[in-house]
Length: 105
Image 1 (spheres, rainbow, N blue to C red):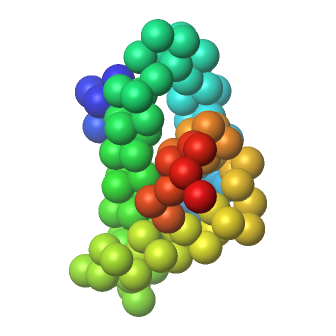
Image 2: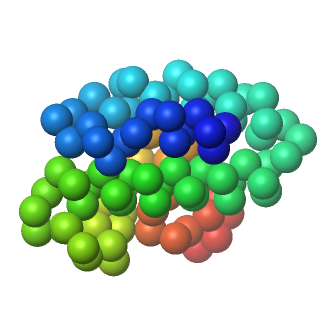
Image 3: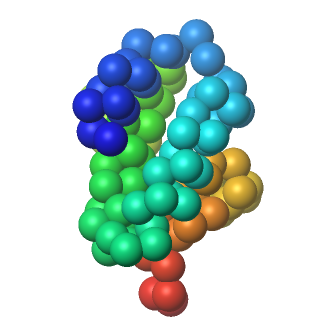
């Protein structure tokens, strides 16, 4: 799964919007959630949080004000996740960029 995400080169896709990225990759991520979430849920959640770090890198490349400011980019992504938690498949599961996992808080 990690190799697949690295092959997507999310940070280089600064021409795409967040909605475009969600449309492009949600079906694959939802398949991983359906398959691996059945028996390896804790490992899957830690992996899906890594997907958020790739989205943070994407935001840093897309928006000049977030470049070299990973915490600010993570806060921006958390704000988006709070407004529309169903945008990405892994956000629906509970691996949101605000640091909360499913069942916490």
